[in-house]
Image 1 (spheres, helix red, strand yellow):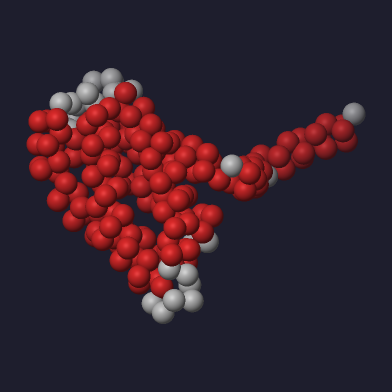
Image 2 (image 1 turned 90 degrees about the vertical axis):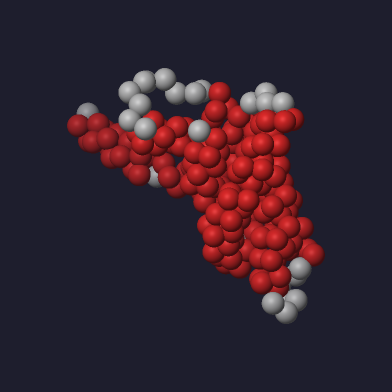
Length: 197
């Protein structure tokens, strides 16, 4: 009995050590079978996490002792991530690969300029419109929010995202670009959520 028990314990230990490998293998399988849905789900989860962390940071910064967190905030970010960030990013990266193939001179620079000058402002505007809609604000409040926050957020977007997107577009394999951007977005959404506070 003792050898069987030690074998069982060794197998359980190996199972825990293999958990990240199994999770990665499952993610890669889902990415291959359902690329848009997988990227949408990943975007939704990481967007919600970014909003949740932003709330914790704001509470700590303002030394607010309340234990209450806005559960609707992460839900709004999850909706935005799932329905907009994941799918739009997936198709945008594919579009860039086909429209500006790697063989084109300065392809990486051209893709970066397309991303930074066209996609980023449009995507940021979509973010503000969607979030304000999900918060139930009227058109006048949306206009005020956009006038107040759009340009400062776009300038920070260019500062934060330009180096990240340079790496993403030029060095990250196509199937992982949305995931890479989602990880950067985790911190970006913390910043955007703090603007709304």
